[in-house]
Amino acid sequence: MQLKRLDGFNDSRRQLARWYGEGLAGTPVITPKVKKWAEPVFHLYVIQTDKRDALADDLKEKGVQTGIHYPIPNHQQPAVRNILGLQPKLEKTERAAAKILSLPMYSELTKGQVDYVCAVVKEFFKK
Image 1 (cartoon, rainbow, N blue to C red):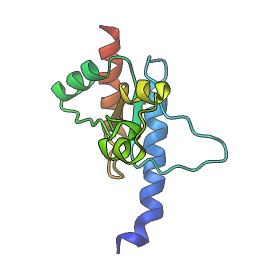
Image 2 (cartoon, helix red, strand yellow; image 1 turned 45 degrees about the vertical axis):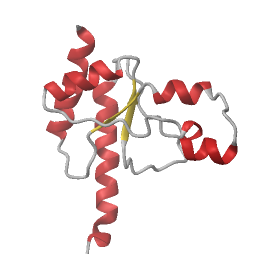
Image 3 (cartoon, helix red, strand yellow; image 1 turned 120 degrees about the horizontal axis):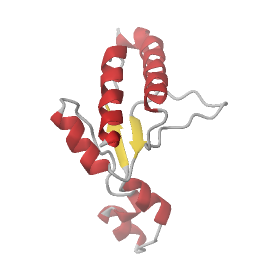
């Protein structure tokens, strides 16, 4: 039954991502960039900031749950290192892993909720 609603869910997530992008414009966070040829569905909405942990704590304090998906890059996972027997240095990947923060993203999220998250982020960076 849910499969019939998939296109609507995906459209909703795209709209939420647009609202996040608009709401976070002018802040020091890096938001996802969408190529003209792409049509992502935003399973996650991941931002990047040098102040990730402090921002996550502030959001949590104000009732906003966040996530840090993939905090350890693939090439540093024990299973991958043991299989490859290598320890490559992927500096960009490692820097990104230290900055990523997933904001709330689900198709039933409202504009008001997105606006609240964006307001909390803006307030955090004004401090």
